[in-house]
Image 1 (cartoon, helix red, strand yellow):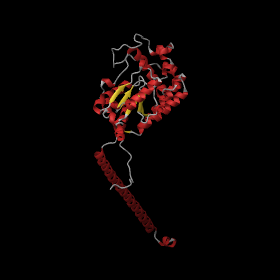
Image 2 (tube, rainbow, N blue to C red; image 1 turned 90 degrees about the vertical axis):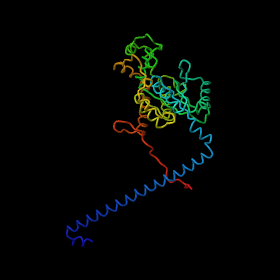
Image 3 (cartoon, one colour; image 1 turned 60 degrees about the horizontal axis):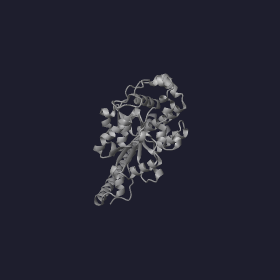
Image 4 (tube, rainbow, N blue to C red; image 1 turned 135 degrees about the vertical axis):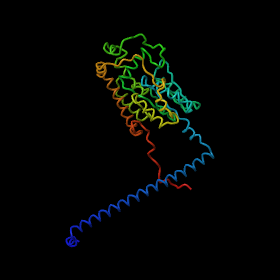
Length: 359
């Protein structure tokens, strides 16, 4: 071969090399096309098999009807929204009220005495029993200012789906501070507990007032932590870790106030049985979905810096940042942006190699 290459003119050698390269590229291209054709054929066969399986299953269902267990899976879903005060919870809840008739589910407000988020042990047992056995209220959407409650602790087989929304701790406290004094545009005539107090939030922090003390920041962590005594010990790192654990393991979805529309969009895609039409309803800008605190004044940087020096803010903010990161992770895998608009991603998995083959 070496002798042959020496005897061959250089131009002819180049031509042979080029011819060989083009031939190899052509062969590789043909192999790739065959692989793509094979993959398309496999997917078509899978879709055909799935269709046959679905038709067979639906035929069986129509002949025998749904079993009690299947009916429970479809219609007995319960959602609990243990809403944290001043996180846009009323705006979101009003969407559920507007959709419940159209989407055929029930909405129930959990009204606790003096808005106490901690239930007595006997009330915990009653509540768990009500939620799981009250068939007339299923599917159901329960909402209220109550701390997380672990249903598995009471020997319950089926657990509800928890959802929630969190907010920047200082922004939430500022909103709550002015809400207690001036109310909001949702019920403007209602007299509030601190009505008549004209002191601004900045003045309150400057004078170390009780309504703006760092201890008032301690709310989102105990709401997620639950009914353990340590959850309500202000500044407890154990409570922080338990709240993080519950957020990741016990909540279907936790959004943030600043990105409420994205939260609603993901819920609609995940739970259309409840939230079909929720995104358009929110975007329509109805007054009931845009509750705003009256007379709210943004705090100065000096006020913010003073609050951020406290251990309590650092722990609450750590939890908020954790929740924000988790929500953004979920959102990144659920929606995509196109022309400045977010769109829900379509189903990205399918089944193949289904055996035994359908008859």
